[in-house]
Amino acid sequence: MKNAPVGDRKYWKENEDHPYKLNQLLKLKAIPTLMEFNKNLELVQKLVERECYDISKLEKFFENPSFVVDDDDDENCNIRACANCCIVS
Image (cartoon, rainbow, N blue to C red; front, side, top):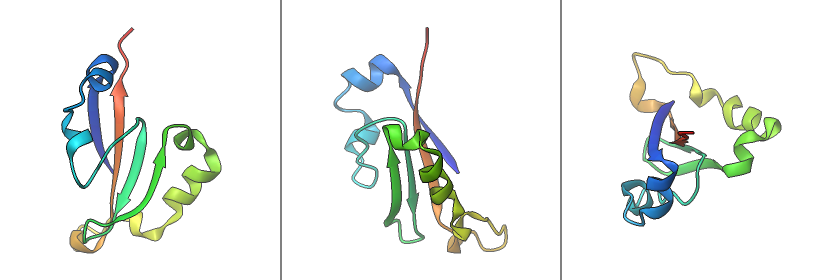
């Protein structure tokens, strides 16, 4: 699992040129977002905003055995990423 912090809320909301919004692979529109890519960097599955808090959807997202990382064979596992916002109160 890779964590991809987007910065504070204001930076995320007001910055149309945010690198994750412009990135052709990520095309991030909302946070939080969980994404899984295969070894060819094709999107396998994605959870966005409220879906990230749905226990059944989270269980399904993580039930795939590709999540298990074999240190000797990293190139054959899928990549999971979490984009989130740092909330500062």
